[in-house]
Amino acid sequence: MRDSFGKRLWLIFAQASTICIAAIFVLRIFYPNFLNKSEPAIVINKVEQTVASAATSSYSNAAKKAMPAVVNIFTSKKVVINPHQRFLDDPAFRYFFGDQFEDMEPPSQPENSLGSGVIVSEQGLILTNNHVIAAADAIEVALSDGRKLTAKVVGTDPDTDLALIKVDANNLPAITFASSESLNVGDVVLAIGNPFGVGQTVTQGIVSALGRSHLGITIYENFIQTDASINPGNSGGALIDTEGNLVGINSAIYSRSGGSMGIGFAIPTALAHQVMEQIIAQGNVTRGWIGIEAQDITPALAESFRLEKVQGALIAGVLRNSPADKAGLNAGDILLGIEGKPVLDSGSMLNLIAALTPGQKATLQISRAGRVMDIFIEIGKRPKPVNTDN
Image 1 (spheres, rainbow, N blue to C red):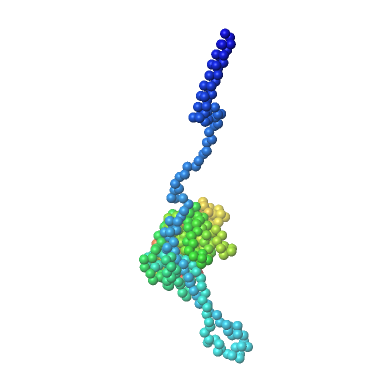
Image 2 (cartoon, rainbow, N blue to C red):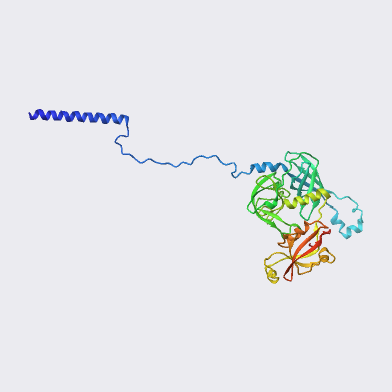
């Protein structure tokens, strides 16, 4: 009885085990990870691809807009070489041969230089630096389309190192002027020119400073300082903003090696446009003049004259019978303002007076013996040659 019960129990166990094994086998077929120890899922952070903004760090549109208006300028000058000069300077040679060699026309060889310029009108007017074309016997302009044209001088202004030349062509790509007065330190600018004669080149930088003066480059200085690379051959080229509009004419660099050291100077469009308009209208530039000699206010002078700010220009001398003399200005007066505009130093004073029209009635604000007062003056015309300061 017991054996029969035992056999029956073993049979039930065997059948149950077989069913369980079969069930596990079926589950493993359909669910391979069944009974495997689960592992945490691995999360990978992926950067989502986004469409780059059109305003990323590319200035190609500005460059494309302005580059056709920037030209290369090649000048040549005949340099006379007299191979007989050393003999003519010898008294013994002159004793035997007299002056017969002096009538011989000495040979000459061309001396070439290059620079850049900016087309300012569709009718062929080109603005450049005066030092680029000064004393040139011939001027050739290479346009962006490959044409080379002879240019003639319309007018020059050495006091600001600007010159206007013209080529016989029409429908040229003229640059668009922007107001240099809206520039701020830190604004991005591009310099376009022909450095070292390698061809048209664009460099990028920022406005490092504004109103730079006392550099000894020109008489009237109000330069834009930039770290955009300006090298020999860039002179007269364009300094543009990120919209491709002209904000300055590249003029000079500070360098000990002859190449760019990160300090370049450009003539602002406010001054360049004023000079250009006068040259177009009358062939030269007329500036205001009052006939004074001035110097900057130092902290010591400001304290001595009891000035609130280290600002203004101290009148050191007044030319007799000049507009300043007739208006009653005296040595020792401090010029604080001209026509409502503040005089920061002697450089800004020079520019403010030069911008006035000869014959114009103007108001000067001065400090005399600690008292601020207005002086009314009739602006004169700056004499030429220039031998005195305003």
